[in-house]
Image (cartoon, rainbow, N blue to C red; front, side):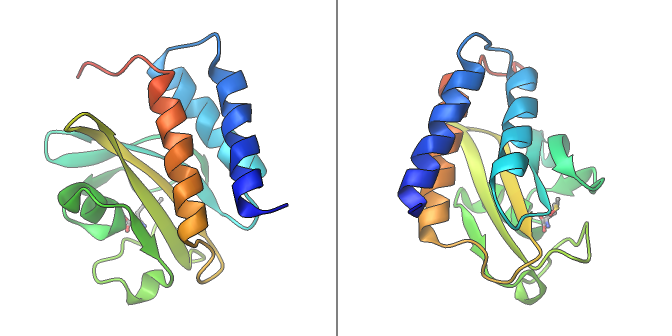
Length: 156
Ligand code: SME
């Protein structure tokens, strides 16, 4: 299956999963489970939510992870500080990378925006270097767009 077909099918699965639920916590929990179930060759998939100037871990699948990440720190904090998605082929070459699991080798992080408000990030790790490419990034950005469109946003 091509990458674009895979991600179209994934977005359709997410639409189905969220069609009768708008609770943000419930939807991010199910979204992380869907990603972990469907994406091959990953070891962590989940969310960090922004509280003032730090990220705190939200729903995820995978091994327990670091709880708090300051904005600007690591791959996740860099995504928030710059407002840009991060596609990291080799996490060990990323200055300040925060290693929650020594097995992780590559990572993609997508900041979650509603208008100009950043809510947090979607973070996915893989044990394989260069696991994610631009097509994965585009597919995951669409996944995030569907998630945001189907969820009432946290007020905090
Ligand atoms: N590696 C991330 C930390 C979060 S874990 O990957 C789950 C980072 O550098 O921000």
